[in-house]
Length: 445
Image (cartoon, rainbow, N blue to C red):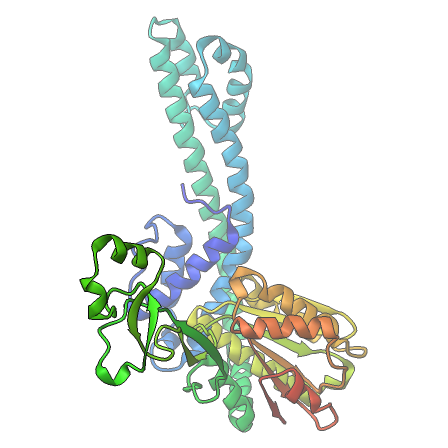
């Protein structure tokens, strides 16, 4: 029985299986051959000639369709499976119970079997007739084995029937909406090509360009520890001092009686050669790049206030969808924050949320702007293990105040841990002070 109870985990598994199939022409070894959704995914890919060739937009669109379809189906599969697991738990409890407990459970067991199965699936009358024999344990074992197999088979049958009923609607939806959605995606790509700034942001956050020259470094001071010194050359000796370093002791000290020598050694009174500063730790200055993951998480904060409606909204949408494409391709967590008077967010690392973006964004543009709440949400997400050392991009007209001092302290702390804060300013009225006081880099359209 395939476990469908963790919907997000299964969607991630199917997402990776889709990419694997497109690259290798077969399902990954980890995918179970009796998984009806995986088999259907393979059929859909094979029966869509648009996926053959270099047009990645068709492939991306088909993947989104499949994952969205599976997300709805898996919720229904999950409900079916939870119900079946209750019955399987009942079977296991009955199987392991002693004979007296079996007698007490028998009425519930027989009612469940009679209500759910025909005699061809679980022959309850036949097993009941065999209880007159001496080997009751063998009868109970055979009954519970048939019952368990019938329960799992019934669950599998229901799931396949549910898929067969739903896939006709899904395939019709793909035919009806496919061309329009494809054209919309192409328009998004055209925006990125139209504005050089968007291309630079995609390259920077996608880490497709070498940003080593733009990365800040940290000055680190370290002290080389004092070690056992090698014999000093004549040029290094500049004085005589008292001590217990046998490698530098004067030859005359070695000629004295042993008891006097050891006493002087114990009290560090031996005469020895010395060099100025030779035994002091040496201070070394190093320039180290701040910690960065090769391709880390992405957090996008989009200003959804009234001043961003219209063309700024389209620019913000197109950039977001391009960054989400990168996140999907590179298997990077992606998180979206929308902010105006209040902020709301959606975790795009979960495939089930991919099809919610348009609705999430299109009903957001109203009111003024509160950047403080947005930054608080971004910092909260950064402090989760999944999103540490992320690239944070703020898309706004930046017509809001600088962060409070406490918020600024948290931002600076995240920067020392490897986070980068970028900004895309759309318009010419927002304060440029954000660029110098908060952000690592800002672009303007």
